[in-house]
Length: 102
Image (cartoon, rainbow, N blue to C red; front, side, top):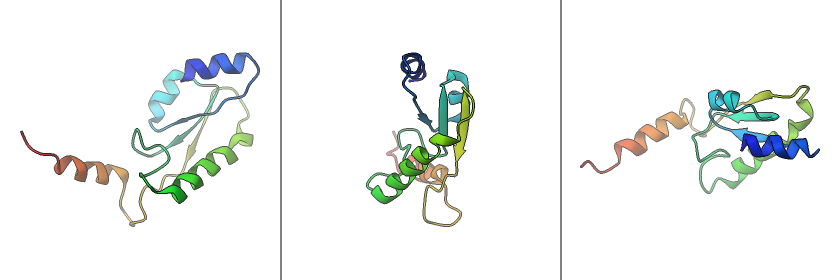
């Protein structure tokens, strides 16, 4: 996506990459990016959580004015669950433990 974003930017159209793994976003060097601490594949939140997804999208777009230099990355605060102390890593661990054993 970063390559595409850089090509689009070269034609004069601003882009904003949204990523979940900051070290990868740093390596691919998009023109500008936000990182959300959510699991890969669930960038904007859990399935069927439309309010949370809309909120994260609005927050992402609301940060567009904050970029001052090419290559800047802004971290958005993550709040994967509504349960205090729970994280998406906890959710993934629970999902893995539920997988059938072979």
